[in-house]
Image (cartoon, rainbow, N blue to C red; front, side, top):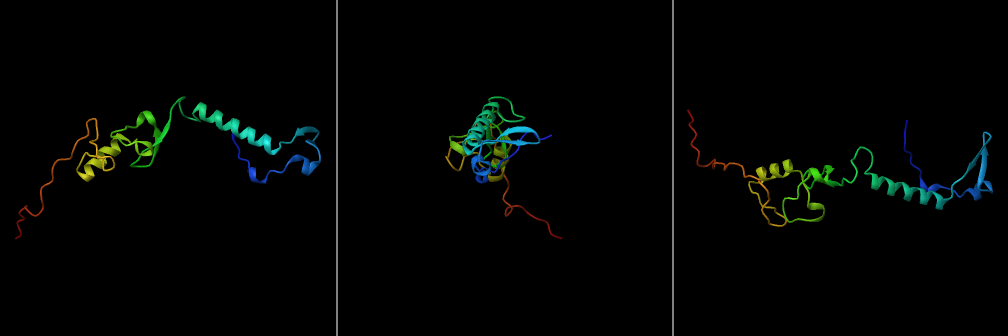
Length: 137
């Protein structure tokens, strides 16, 4: 079963304009119709409840951040802030940063010019292909 549903708020019609009163009877049951203000209050309450509980499948108090390299979202405690960058560029996965360092051959952040820390390593130096001798027979 579905626990959540969406309501298109742009097209909600005030109950009094349709039925002339705020309550209606359907199949012998009395149903109270929502006004736009009721829907707005309901959505604000639901949003605040989701934010405090952390949402479905998340532990309480965890903050979701986006990795600046792979753009995947993960919990803040699974990410690192390896340099002096801040804001949305502050967090990245350790594996992503190490892969980026290996690719560019440097452990310095190109945004803030600080050395990544702690314990990021450089790949072994590559030999120059012009210097290598090739035996052609």
